[in-house]
Image (cartoon, rainbow, N blue to C red; front, side, top):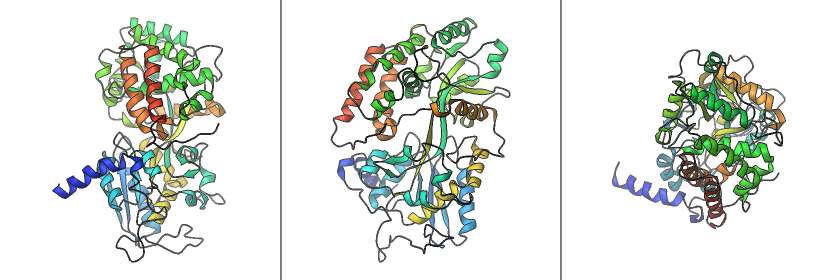
Amino acid sequence: MNRRDILRRSAAAGLLATPAAGLLTGCASGGGDDNDDNAAYKGTKSEQNPLGVKEDAPLEVVIFSGGFGEEYAKTHEAMYTEKYPKAKIKHSATQEISKTLQPRFVDGSPPDVVNNSGTGQIDFNGLVSQNALADLGELLAAPSLDVPGKTVKDTLLPGAVEIGSYDGAFLVLNYTYTAYGIWHSNKLFTERKWEYAKTWDEHIALCKQIKAAGIAPWTYAGLHPRYMSWPLISTAIKFGGPSVALALDNLEPNAWKSDAMKAAADAWHQIVKDKYILEGSPGLDHKQSQTAWCQGKAAFISCGSWLESEQKDVTPAGFNMTIAPTPSLGSGDKLPFEAIRGTAGEPFMVPAKARNVAGGLEYFRTMLSKKGAQDFTRKVASLTVVAGATEGVELPYGLTTVVKALDASGANGFNWVYNNYYRKLERNLVDAACGEFFSGRIGPADFLDQCQRGADSIAQDSSVKKYKRAA
């Protein structure tokens, strides 16, 4: 790296992190003009080419190199090339999306497609507030690539568009459909004759039984403790109803101190007090805690449905990992035990100043084809937001349990989006509070107070764009 690169990266790190800076604003339909070296590529729209792709325009795709790997993207790229054989595709993968791409956003030369995922992702709040993302509305209205008579939007699962929309504009394609729950080994439970608990009192009784057998009931990613906020918030929503999530998303005063959140925090504090967490968990990262779980050192772990794919190299044969909803606090819960958190995830975006915006949208249309979605599921054992895309696909054991859990949850499924609106709130502030809480350094009241102070700090920060989610 030369001195110029260092200066560019240093500048970008400061600029993109500050929405008020206003230095990333750009045209939502592509950067530059026709006489500019960075002029946008433009094609002619037709029935066969509804998005107006220039058939020989190059396309640059940057993939997050995480649990899903990058091979699935190469298949999507091959599908794109099959339709546009004159288009040269530049493919790259990195775990450091922000560090790699922030300088290019500042320079006005971003890639055409970005899988903005992982711990090092670029903050979406900053991107949205600076008009740095192309509007994907035209994609939704385009005909599906391989489902006759339907638009792309018609083929998507419920919630897929809402999770990527900001103030009514669809800006982020979240490609996977993820269930979040509590995981256990069906093999272990069958051998020990344990039954997954449906109520909190039964769960605590089971934890006592598991501990007596010489196994830690729980482990978690102590270096990323927000993973434990997911079942805690889920417990509160099932107890108090979806309005609990709405209050968190809209930064309502004392949302983190509602009766439902207090009841949930009190319940989860019991596994800390009774020492039902694997010793040393606060020092483990997500892979280490998941591996300890796969090794039978702990019975439960909180994670999303990418877990099976992420752990495939270390999961013992016949382990049969199984997802389940959070236990109900009691008969007063407003949502049934079967209700589980389901949401679209793994975000993709087309930068507003990309040279080939139309190509980026067409690439997304390829991803959202039934063929593209089925291939993704076969390769990485994860669901996509494309409805019916698991038909004819042989699913691994864990993903089969995810499909069953989502089916059982049905219309009772729930989600929250404060983490999408305000990344810092979950990744920094709630994460820190969870670290203190689940390590036993603070109790429920201090935990909720710390979370609320974090939410209030975001609400009062005039440099952070605020979003309102409707009920």
